Length: 275
Image 1 (cartoon, rainbow, N blue to C red):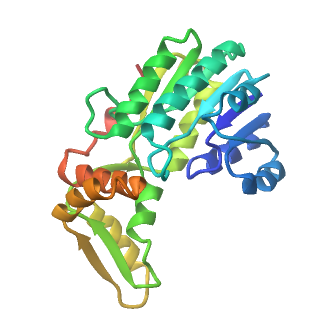
Image 2 (cartoon, rainbow, N blue to C red):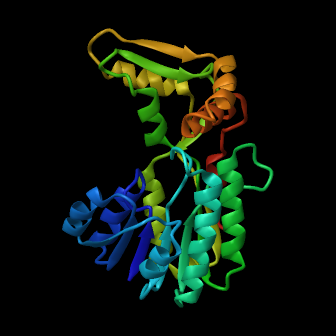
């Protein structure tokens, strides 16, 4: 039995499909009961509950030999955060896996995760990595770069209804994006290839792209006239601070966009490493 925590998001959907196609017996922990019917129809057992609830997590991991954590608190609203989800909930999931006698846990982290990273998501993922490494479980840490699908959706959110693509900042900084399909492929391999046990694997895209290039591709695909609007760097900086009390997820996204527009986000494509 394989448990997937976070199996209904941008990454979770393709991952569930891949593992079901391989004949895996799946259990998916989700907070949203609206996903139950679709998961059951796909051949997975749905468990509705919050990953922050100890009883729910204990029940979810029972009888599983592999646990996959694809949870994140980056885009979640009030009451949650990377600290609550990416660090604390993942650490609790690790402990529950140990108590349940799970053999192997796969953690979806983030490329460049470290204790000193400017983004809280990466710092919290790193804390979870450390807990998993020291757990005594067989482990695999998957470290993808930014999801192409997530940022394509954000940039094209007002297309075609308002005929406007929104670029965050200057938009000319090369950034490595990876498709969730590639990430799902890596997790699938980690499930079935014991050579990937006890390793951290960077999963990067084939090319570096800028926000402007993504916006151009989106607008070129629409026949009607379109335009590209830029959210200035100073506005991103202000939003990353001012939005936190009332819209924490929006504030985190503004901060991420600011860092992505002003930091070195390119990756040598030979960087797909295991260590």
